[in-house]
Length: 257
Image: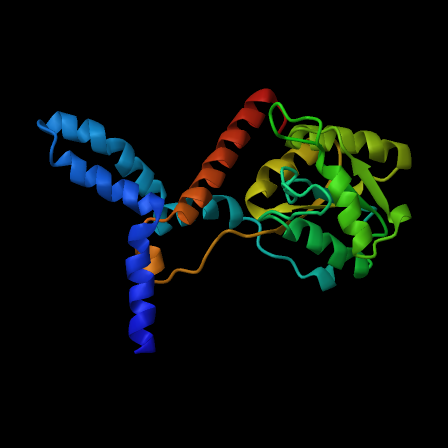
């Protein structure tokens, strides 16, 4: 009985999700529209949305970015001048302003702490202002400082850059900080899907960079109910990958890479 309940809880609840409801309603509505061309015009946006919401498409896109940057064994790393952590892990738009609300890329922060405790470096540099259009009064570095100190990282081991709005500025302003310290050999932490662009930008700025990818989105290949049904979670992964590829193309055009 419990197995049957589990089965129906997975299958039936699907039809109450807004994403699925919109797809179903659109398909039903198409039967009431005359003309093949009109049906195609109506359904094509739904087909595109569903296409990028599939497991296979989302994984193909995200793996095209992540497979070149497999996980590293933190216990086998050399000593670095600094651990550089790219912003993007903290939700600066959280309704509750007095707490640090982590986002889906929190591993950027937690891995930095583990590496520091592993004595990979005695300096952590966090780089991140606000990448939110029309909301530049908030900055991620403010919350990052509270996060690191709450986890026992001493203040004299921390440096913060709070002006950057994008990856290029992350590298540019971090360079300004490190030029004052004479440090150039860095371990760069960011999400695996973001590492190709980040690594290239920091190298272009003259850093001796070792990438330390984290926050992987790639999933194991498996066949089950969750992988055969289009899902907003897969759409999010596809969106992340497409956005990153656009960023890589634009950065190459601008000469940042």
